[in-house]
Image 1 (tube, rainbow, N blue to C red):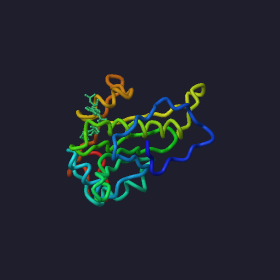
Image 2: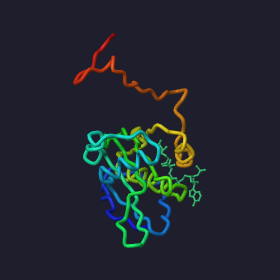
Image 3: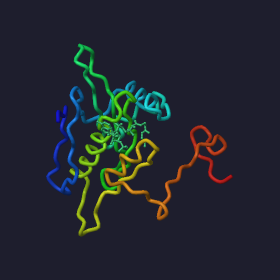
Image 4: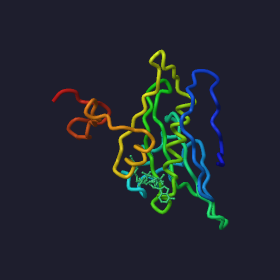
Length: 185
Ligand SMILES: CC(C)(COP(=O)(O)OP(=O)(O)OC[C@H]1O[C@@H](n2cnc3c(N)ncnc32)[C@H](O)[C@@H]1OP(=O)(O)O)[C@@H](O)C(=O)NCCC(=O)NCCS
């Protein structure tokens, strides 16, 4: 597989990689990093995820732990376009949350989402501290929307319920005032 910018290997604290990255179809290239803000926003909204503003998208590249995306070159002298992405929000120690898994509809079901997910997992495998004897292993989470569930299950993810339920503090104007949280009623 072509990889525009392979991540550096760590010389210590590695766990053996257990994922293999399959080959991409012709014209597609996997890149380490994040799509430009405009492409990020387009990828989210065009794939059916909630639209995000420029201000919300701006910190993605600087504040995520790792990300990757796939471009497509139709070989017609057009600029390659970003067609799939995913990223990891995490502390690099043990918390790793996978987010923004999205493939443009016309490029779905070609294995791109699988390549992105496997690359994210492989990167954790290469860089996260892991020593099973010490109980040291990465804690990898995500919220699975309908279209991604099979993909995640195929890659080893399991539902956490009933042991642990994903919960969200749903935005409520009554709970949040500009600049500060209101605690209590
Ligand atoms: C979830 C999502 C990222 C998957 O992306 P994708 O690039 O289509 O993923 P893949 O092609 O790797 O796999 C998806 C399905 O296509 C199948 N597939 C893979 N290659 C294929 C091919 N050449 N021909 C036909 N089907 C194929 C996979 O087996 C899988 O099907 P399955 O779920 O029935 O097993 C994409 O559907 C998406 O962007 N959905 C909208 C946004 C979203 O909900 N994101 C998840 C948020 S949690």
